[in-house]
Image (tube, rainbow over all chains, first blue to last red; front, top):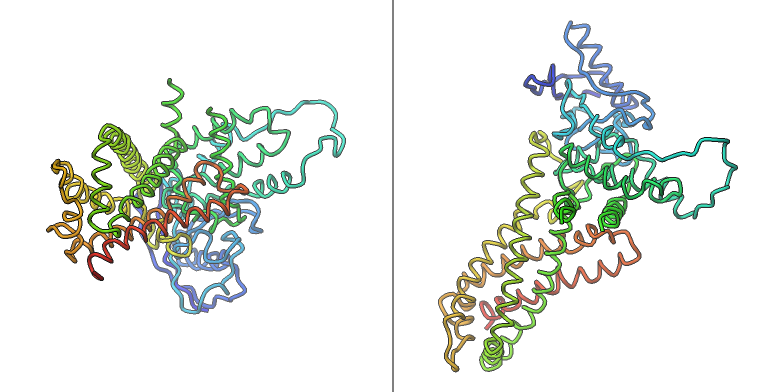
Length: 245
Length: 220
């Protein structure tokens, strides 16, 4: 395959960026998208140029480190996968891929395709934890939990915090992320102690970080690599209302 | 009182305000349509209806004040939310996410709302304002609505009404259901009930309104 990558190049957080086109030849359709990027970067290094910076870690779709906008789709066109789990067979020979960093003022660009997602960390610090009694390990099944609640909490806990929801949302809203985090604690007995403070604090921190207001377009649900449902946003609204009144 | 202020300053609080005012305005549309359908009953029926409203002026005026407040709250918070959201993504993508991720009616709330607002100003300035200056017992309101220069028999006016009402339908297509998601019941066992009621508000009611300019502007 022959691919043209039109990548966003920006050398520092304050410098102005621009799109630069790079041809990549001999791309196998069995390569992952990042293997194609590695190939491109090897070419750049051989030519004495700066390789394109992009975030990646496990390359197994579970760590939440990677995240690239490819042709206007967060994590590319394939449903339910991260950028690292995307393969070149999802594209056509001769295709031009416009590769951009997540765009949101709460995710400032550090370099090229790498963005600063510490705003998510600060939202988590504001309430994404539980109080734990120290002591011996509790017996298995000592705390009975409804199967339905476990399933919903686990679905929400699948969120890897990659930021695709914010990236694709026209409002840069973080409601799906915060909704998933609030849900995973609110539905389990371990999360009850901080339940009300958690939702109030996390929403307050989300607003301080400058994320936009949710307008329920549901784009986040479509692009989420873990397919987190917008039902978690409804639950977040409900939890917030309960905590406020 | 500060907690109320804090609540409506929060992103979710602002959306609750949009949703509550939006739903109340939709309920007003339903009552408005019931009155308008009297036009199909002929001049006498419609004039009697408007006269009966004029006879309970204090009630109507009170409702008008409430409606104005609802509209203002909905419009002002709508503008605020839209501006804040634009500010949250000041650099846009070279290729923006499009129809693969969102529906047109969900993306275009600010535009459909703005055009409906322009229509509302025009609508009030013509019909509502004319009605305020008609005090005699034999005033012919039907004639103003149908036959006057700004009435439905003018195809341009009728066409403008149809266009604005189609945009209103688009606005409600997203807005009605979205409100219940904001209230936090979008994921509940009431989901299918909400979806059914939503069809009444975004489709049936706007079609009811549209039937009037279509009939009096183009059929009759």
